[in-house]
Length: 250
Ligand SMILES: [Ca+2]
Ligand SMILES: [Ca+2]
Ligand SMILES: [Ca+2]
Image (cartoon, rainbow, N blue to C red; front, side):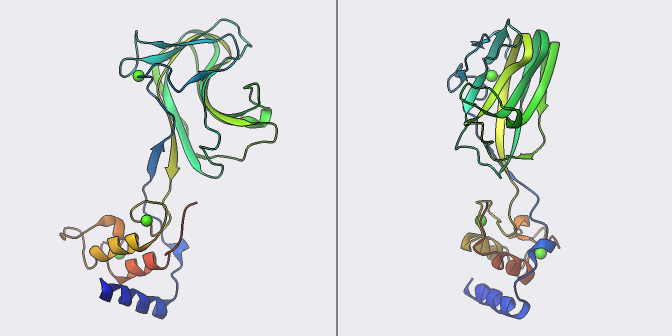
């Protein structure tokens, strides 16, 4: 290990800091679930209902998964009433996220959505507060899974005061059910972060050093340490990691 680190330092002196932009970061990500009680197995615990005419309840008649799902009934088109979790200061502008979830509908006029929106003090979304909405389920539909693309959270607009992960009837009425909803933080690893803890430090150097000299099929082969994807872990990979020492995300 000591010899390897001194080899790294020598290599760094000889080659200079590598051009990290030319090497693709290891193609993987960590998804961190953010919403609490996303399968409604604890009823509507952790979920709140905003002012409006929509009525929400925990429903165990036909959940998609587990023993319970969320049910909403809206009788007044144009009224609001959202089921939500306030994630202000939990989700961070500039980070990447993805939302998803199951929706079932019955006699819906308008649309049923799952959304991540900036909202004002009344729980309404200002025009510039729509971050991501999925679903748009209408009429009568069986359980269907909806998922967004990966998106970067924009900053909070000046006329909003919170960010909610929410469900509602978008200018609609009828009955709807939601289950196994998700809001995940997508981490696209920075180059050299072999253990995916969002920083490049001695742990990553150690990971690469432990696999030093290995190749596919070798007992110490560890693909995450093959930073330049040439099927061998050698001084080039160690130099790439060492050149990133101290880098953090975000
Ligand atoms: Ca469930
Ligand atoms: Ca790391
Ligand atoms: Ca390599």
